[in-house]
Image (cartoon, rainbow, N blue to C red):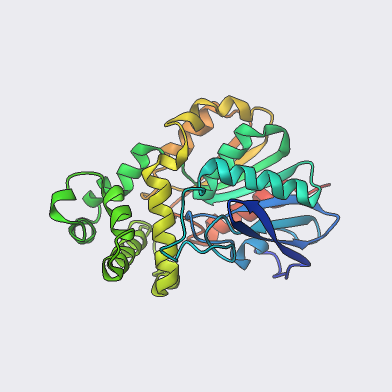
Length: 319
């Protein structure tokens, strides 16, 4: 079985001016002459933590990480209520990726993404297929309206008590409508107490609906108020717009991925992101292998998920 690779530190990093007042943090690790690989973190809003570096053999890969607009070490910070999200959309992020690729002088790279990072990776690869050598995707999402409705409402059938708390944090008149819209409005409320409660309840629900695998532990990042606010603002912003994509477009345009080898790793117990999303994509992307992992859930929730992702990056190492 594959194991995590050794921890490494960046050998180069910087802040890239991507326009609209945004500075994007980026870093490169591993072998400067190695095969380029781009990391697309989840959330939106999680930031690219150092654990991503260990999914790659540092002797073989030139590993590129960056924090998407508004989160991590990029500025301005979406945790600040005055930070506008108007120029924070999927097309903006795709343009940022291309600007970073050009800045680093990379012609083509392997792209890895998890959860929301899968949606972004697919959108990027379908728009720029000639720039992607392979795709390694785990916890596959397309951020469709149906998926958003599933997470914010239908999951209440799995966790009824916790979902009732999530729903009841919304004003009563809004509880039968779009909950993601209601939370986005509360997160923009002029009253800091309203904003804080919305961020807290949103992140509490986030921790619940990914907790279907054995041994789940609460995410300690949600204990930090600024992370909660940043994460909740960005997730609701993207989800209420269905990822700023035409609904169903990623599946419809999967033919553009022909010729790009891929591995999709998904937990069979991932109820937050049901496995049928990955399965449907595998039916129309002939160059992809779908690996379903027994009792594991969302994210790199256990050893088997992590091992499968590392095995995929190892498979695509240069000979």
